Image 1 (cartoon, rainbow, N blue to C red):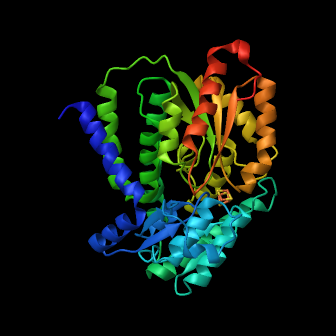
Image 2: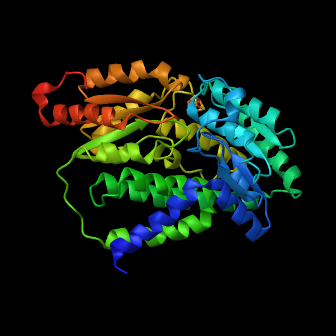
Image 3: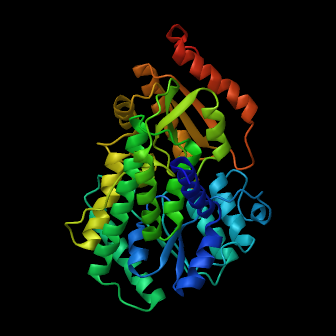
Length: 393
Ligand code: SF4
């Protein structure tokens, strides 16, 4: 098999896992006889579940139309939360031995209440992390919550979680994140041309599968990618931003890339935001996981957190200087309040810096791809013909 075909095969294996986390969780559980916990985005430290010997699987949006879930959550909840609740109502969360989350928005809290209502037997543990990062009380409070998570997992798994086990999990997850960041770096530099769909498969599968198995596949994949000659690209380089909690539909990336675009970087949750930050390995485990929560918001700020010294728009300005993107496509899930309320700040920054940009709102129920394509083509045209800059895309 040639290298390109091997790359394709690895990416397809990872994409298959990412497409059906419940199937993977069921198979893993049967194979290992260990527990599987569903975890929710965006701030939960998966390392703590891993250190208990269980599989942390980040619950993903399901492509299926929302049916029973309609009676549990209003239509004005985001697609991710409505899908999650629908999965609970239609028996798709049965593989999980419990659900753990750190809250980050009102919609997610509503979804958790609905899941508790629908699945009263399912252990659901919510840790409230302080969103106001500058408060002097924030660090001790978060350390306390992580200690409670550890205790709850010990009860559910029937064994004590040793500090050494958490350290080991931290090392394993840091290694995996470093490999994924390496792929991102290769893509930014133009060394490789993995598509948006393929990059999503790499990150989403890391959220779902046994992390050591994922790392083994990533090592093979990187060796193959490094052996391929670089392909020069004359395409427009774009940064994709936003899309909290769940993955944009792969066909959206296909459409964007069909317009003469290379997506060179992103800060979406199922992308660089997820892998941006390692957990320090020179602190006690609880202190290390607490630091990680703060470090992530410094590295890739999130509009669900409040911090005077970190903001998303400044981050984006720096990211574009570093990755050489010529414009930004902002992907915003419909009814994602933390994103909607912050978007004017981003837009102001794009105008101040003269960054061509386009806002695309995504919906669980589907996308008018042909219509969106015209708007992406207009953005590409503006970038290729700078005289048009300032025209709305
Ligand atoms: S942050 Fe946005 S996408 Fe995530 S749960 Fe809240 S509303 Fe939904």
